[in-house]
Image (cartoon, rainbow, N blue to C red):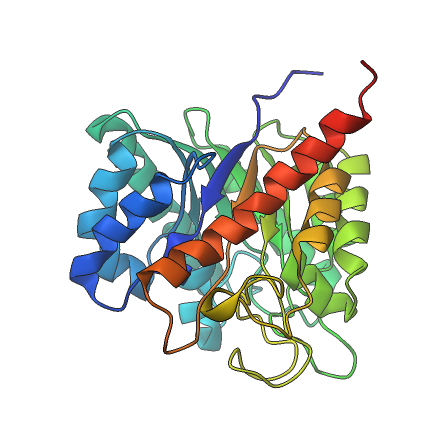
Length: 322
């Protein structure tokens, strides 16, 4: 088996960035300055990207390794049924063209400076009423996408919560088992799956589901990334119960945290250790909703979540024989 490079650590800084666009570049610089941060997760082809592309592109080109995501692009078009797993040819083609936009943007970043895109995250959208049919279309779309020259970039599927029979789902994309079967069928070296702590917890209504998903993906040989993002099981500043709203950690202090979040340092460290060191990236994706959150609190929200990676690494090192 080919050896994989060491995992990078990226931050979805757009989740905590200031509302004032003129302050965002300096905020991103502060996030980049946190020890252990290798780069950013950047949404492409959505509303946030349209606002940020002029200032974020130079940040990416400066250096580091980064991850691009199409979740915002797909969710912006959710009502229209656009997605790589759509049974409608035109909607599927529209989704593929969004991936093409990300491909072109990655090439632009590579040509503009020393920054590199390590992974592009795609999704098995739209909501899948019949996972087998949707899975077949997703496999066809991925086969086409992976035929392009990606210049070393991995195109990975982030698992989101699948349909629940009671209708209480957020995304309703493909089950993780179906996504893993697609990867088996593709058998391509530059793809894999990403497990998001919150999105798996939302699916299972349990803090154990993220561990189950990450272990399953690792055992199947397709785990490529993990995302630290929290969820609140009750109504809160982050919306309705089990909303996919990127809640921060419950043990972060003041405006940097959310006391009702199910994610804390201990749970995050367990998740990271379960994933192991064979992933391409570890991502922090937490948001701030409190009106009194100043720049310091926004930075601390990310710093606190990042400390879980250090905690997990130290635990692993302590367990090794001397």
